Image (cartoon, rainbow, N blue to C red):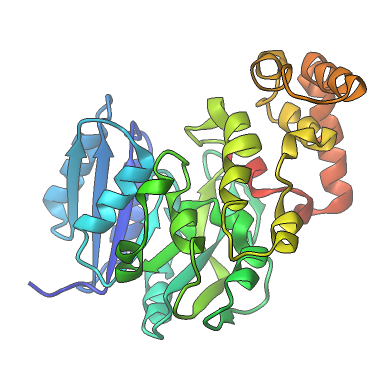
Amino acid sequence: MRTPQLTICIATYNRAAYIGETLRSIITQLDDDVEILVVDGASTDNTESVVRQIAQKEPRLAISVFSERRVDQDYDKAVELSRGEYCWLFTDDDLLKSGAVAAVKAAIKEGHDLVVVNAEIRNRDMTVLLERQRIVIEQDKMLAPGGDEQLFIAALHYLSFIGAVVIRRSIWLSRNRKSYFGTEFVHVGVIFQEPLPGSVLIIAQPHISIRLGNAQWTPRSFNIWMFQWPKLIWSFNHISHKAKQSILSREPWRNLRTLIVQRSVGSFNIQTYRQYLSAMRAGALWKLCAWSIARLPQKIFIGIHYLYSRIKGPESRAFYDTRI
């Protein structure tokens, strides 16, 4: 059997309503150099059945089912089981735009260690375009070996979206992945734990349609974005303090504007205040402000956030705002 150039690796859980559409958006673009591998982390709905029905008609699609859901481990297992020289770590509810696979194949033929695939943002049913280009660049951007800090500054917020990542399989397997299990962002740990030996390409044209507001981690988003995510990005020792600070502070929860954003999207309320912030060492005035933000009606902050975004433009919205 011919070794594929690219494996599209999808970790899924309870996505029966979406994964069929996702797979169909990919299958129409397949050739003999590309395979799809789905890892189902113990779905309790009929996700497995949906995938197997499609696989009966598509020999380039395979599924592996495991007894528990662990998203980082599931993506890692998908890479281990894949046969491609490169792995595209795709999501289970978003869609590929026409020409996406051909564009990625052309990019990996150039020998880059990592390809970052740009995306557009759409509403939950994919009928309305909300943001045309997630990374705003006019043309493809190539970063030479040693350009990790450039990549960190240019694309880190977007790289929280795992579907953007196409990585050389041998690089993934050579790196420490286990220390990032449970972070929700094993791919970011793999990419930035040490400098990549080869080049990186950021594709300017959006080839992915992201389904806004459908993330399964929404109930845990405050903990993820205020604690887990900053802990991860501040752990990369070869990235400068200045670069990290330009992306996110060590303790973003201390910023009242950030709390307003979190309140506007529904991930910060009086319960999360009591769970995460009430016992923190902070001044009495800050605690009063944070408590007030948590207590006041969400609709007030939706309006504030909307006006701020209109004034500052799309760059004012960190990527997590679009995924929760």
